[in-house]
Length: 240
Image (cartoon, rainbow, N blue to C red; front, side, top):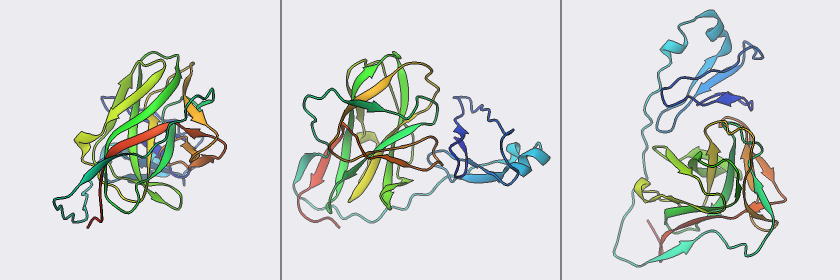
């Protein structure tokens, strides 16, 4: 993924790594950020791209080393927990700010003080006029009330043709463990064109957060919440 730092402008490479991005409106002092899950991001000034044609050839991302806190596992009880809530009957729906590549929407969840192991993420689609769609699921730590560091070490892609119903994503292969507040988002990874992709929504609950690209600023949609859920196992008692 490539984005201008602190600007809502960016793009995503295809499966072969090819990409294009328009630099005609960029200033020499603007910074282009190269990023992908599992690797450290790298920043390059636009002035370097314009003066040295080999700058892109020299962009190499280093693998990110994830240092996890020590976990002491003891025999004990676990319970199944659903951190979302049912909206019941509602005619309200909401979705991405627009259906262009890089758009992302996130919801906040709170696992409390004991360890929570996410096993499944669910989003209730109210309308999908596209047919097959491809999205990426992201899981973030929270900082200052917004998503911060992505805790995934590999991409979670999901494809679906559901027109109306529950989009369910298996999280068990990723060995996730969270405590406290965290965010889960859906991200558009290809331009979808004309059409509608909406999710069941309500006026009550945590607000939607949206952004145009992964280096862009998060914006809160205070008037609406989405029917997103995270189901998993939680320790009964204290964790260390």
